[in-house]
Amino acid sequence: MKIKKIKLIYFSPTGTTQKVLESLAKGFNAEHVEHYNLTLPDEGSSVIPSLSDELIIFGSPVYGGRLPAEAIKRFKQLKPGKTLAVSVVVYGNRDFEDSLLELNNLAIELGCCPVAGGAFIGEHSFATADAPIANGRPDSVDVQKAMEFGTRIKKTVEMLPSVDAHVELNIPGRYPYEGGVRSMPVTPQTKEQTCTLCGTCAAVCPTAAISVNESVATAIDRCIRCCACIKNCPTESRYWDDEMMKKITAWLTDNCAARKEPQVFLAGMQRSSK
Ligand SMILES: Cc1cc2nc3c(=O)[nH]c(=O)nc-3n(C[C@H](O)[C@H](O)[C@H](O)COP(=O)(O)O)c2cc1C
Ligand code: SF4
Ligand code: SF4
Image (cartoon, rainbow, N blue to C red; front, side, top):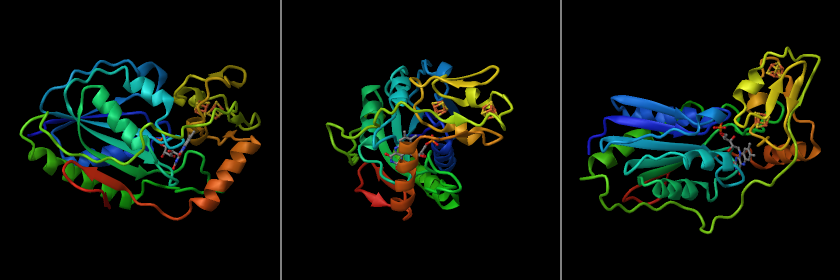
């Protein structure tokens, strides 16, 4: 099959998933690349009819070894129809556990025909300069590997006679899925001395948890701990003051320092480390 258009459909609060998908699309070298960024609250209800000469690449971060509930909710509002699909999860150098299988199965549930899956590494949402966890990733090596994956997907797809051709795709993971994020009633705090009330944190929050008026207020029941507000604040005024968050981050810094590499899975092929 010849693919003319790639649709990148993703939830990516701190941007690493988006970057991996863009690199993959570059390696695929399609004539057109369309973005469906479902990260912000008002962008989750698109209907996206797809054609037979298109490929969808779904992208999501890993939260607690699973997909974030917010990502699932948004993907489920799409109606892509019978379209070739690739699932990509991006995790913070701990593990991706059942998340890739979950995304692959979700693509099937939406009517898509999966041909590949990949687990890539991105800077951990909780990481800071003082508590590094895969800082700076995806880096140039990851980008190169994502591009190579894109090229390999193109070759696989070109060998397929039709969108519903029978392919064997083995994605690792357990079903019923295990893990998931523990509910924690915490939000980042704001340093009032340095906050300029610019509103950037509110603009990037995927759950509309932040409002900025005379001060910054965060709705605790809406916060998914994605850290978009922390990583995007121009004056570094958002931070975690919570003891449990500090403990988790310290554990990750101590135990997830050894570099992990992307893993990719293609139709008709065995598991391979890249
Ligand atoms: C609540 C939460 C839970 C997370 N759980 C995991 C995890 O189980 N394993 C892991 O390696 N990284 C985990 N991460 C890190 C993210 O998967 C990682 O930073 C990813 O690159 C973020 O993607 P984004 O930049 O597209 O938002 C978690 C992050 C958050 C916010
Ligand atoms: S982004 Fe930072 S400086 Fe701007 S309003 Fe939010 S906390 Fe304040
Ligand atoms: S308030 Fe919570 S949900 Fe909103 S951007 Fe910050 S960490 Fe993410």
